[in-house]
Image (cartoon, rainbow, N blue to C red; front, top):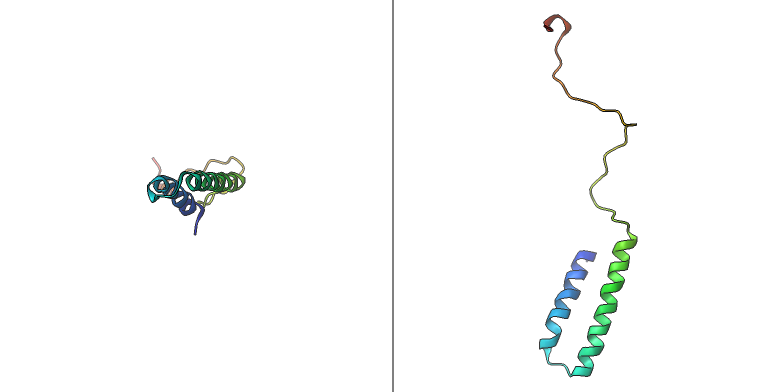
Length: 77
């Protein structure tokens, strides 16, 4: 299960918890534990440093490369 799915599941749990019919003392404890869980997930996401699944473009030493159609020298005007 991915971190995104865990965060959404924890949010759904917090949203549904008041309507589950637990006593107030249980609600308080469960909300506290859910909050600690969400905080820990936030710390894990933050420690990953925003690493994404998208590859970063290779560094080419600040060289700009433009793509132009190849024109043979005898056809240049």
